[in-house]
Image 1 (cartoon, rainbow, N blue to C red):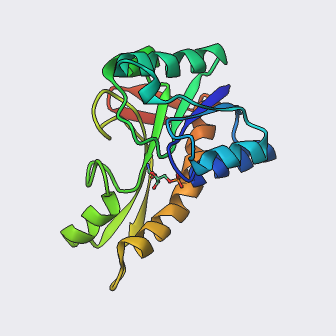
Image 2 (cartoon, helix red, strand yellow):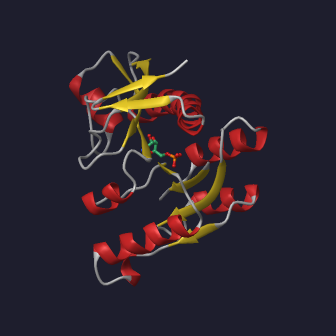
Image 3 (cartoon, rainbow, N blue to C red):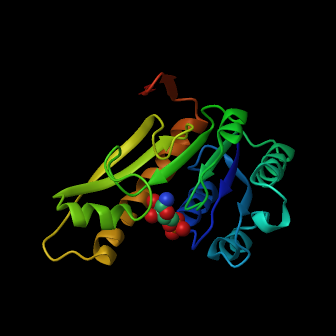
Length: 200
Ligand code: GRF
């Protein structure tokens, strides 16, 4: 299975995937990193692991559709069968999601459906939640609404700041995302509407 990773930022989730792939634990090969940010930390990680990386700038394309077409073409040219969003700060259009049905994974730093969208950790603190966590889900046409693959709960501790809670959640992200990718790549996920069955 060829995997394409889309990232806009530091790329710590991308890095743990690269490490898992190097160990032979990911169940697939990371064929390309695509970013919308030329300065994304993920590019340096791609170089470190010998993964081809490309920047596809939204500003180089006349419309959002044209930008997404370029992203999709880059993925298809490399025979990508699974797309992993790893801190990709753009909402995918329905047209792009339909081009890769049930073949896009995302990681979100809360227990969905609680706290979707931006600043999930800040939302959890502001709400007074005692527990938050991590969700890996398939991407559908909504924002953080797709079928849930794996989740892990993380406690909110007394005195937590956005930074301390984010760090505790990130440790779980790094465990969960490669595990979910491996389940996908090894054919262990069966999607039935909103429900994702994990086969033995
Ligand atoms: C993570 O918190 C992830 O859950 C969210 O964006 C952040 C990306 O972090 N979608 P990194 O770039 O993988 O370090």
